[in-house]
Length: 488
Image (spheres, helix red, strand yellow):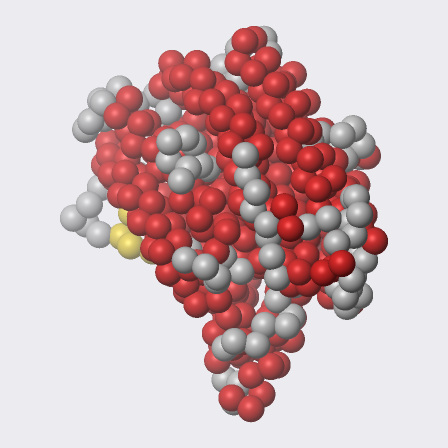
């Protein structure tokens, strides 16, 4: 089942590639069909998953490379636990949304939708791979479609932003590769399941603290952790809307997932020693990211910088090292993906109608866009952590799990919530309320089925998790409980 989920998007790519030029507009239908099949299969795994802590399920294992010259073998090894299954469902859902909101793409639609599906395969592979080398390959494949999607279909300094994203990620990947090889050669295996069950490494070929640092740098760049965050605003600002949704909703989560799955599970002793330092970086991310967000006048850069702040909560929850904190960190990854994805969809729809992202030029758009204004209010309130919406569930879980271990730094995190309320409410007031500027008299609301359907689906999930969080918390807790056990 997992192999089908991971590689079925490539079947969609093959079908799109066979389309004749006069039928290239069919590419969106093929991409939507492929994305929906993957989403349905992911939900089937979600429904069938046994939410008992410990162990991976739906294992697919085959020998990949086996040589007498090496004491270890490489495996094609896929599997999911509660943590990775949450990311699997998030990826398949947001990819479906990304395809739908790209319905009007006219520039080279065959290539565009093909790259979206290749990107989905690479992301699904990252969250299901249980062999370190296979994990690294999927991690690197993601760079190729992201580069082309930003550099061809983006806006502004799109080539500059695409290269900046690639170079930052590639720089981090170099660190991660050294760390992976050091782990594999020290333990004579690249099997992530075996590595996460072994006693603490003592005789690694380089100090285990150095291995941990190499991995943390790689995952910190992706998260992103300050000062490695500068690629994010540029990439978000110049990427097409659908790519911004996947970038904020899923790609940033690769960093948080790597920290929990690799750094903490395999090197728990070093993680305990580094806990306070990680919490300090998290607090800086939260407060600094929120303060910089307050200064933004570009609607898309405002949402981009808010992601820097909100990813700090992932690191803060992870630094608690307990089940509650780790559950909060993973929940923040999931809920932030939904909420920020929704915000980017809305920003893209507003931009399509006004052809500007300058907050100072907008006023009273709710008079002409009542549906989009309603959706933006819901998304904004979810982002600032209003109870009964998904953002509240993850943030309060982070605070409950972290306060006992890092009291002062948790208080700084709460201050970040206050700053979030400031920039979200300020943005909504400036853009949607007040007097309608005469130049926006002709703009219209979201009326197409793919626009309203995408927005309503995302809002429905955000409300569902806010009202009944057990639907995801139980799943995620079953995945992070063994990690917390290693760290205890």
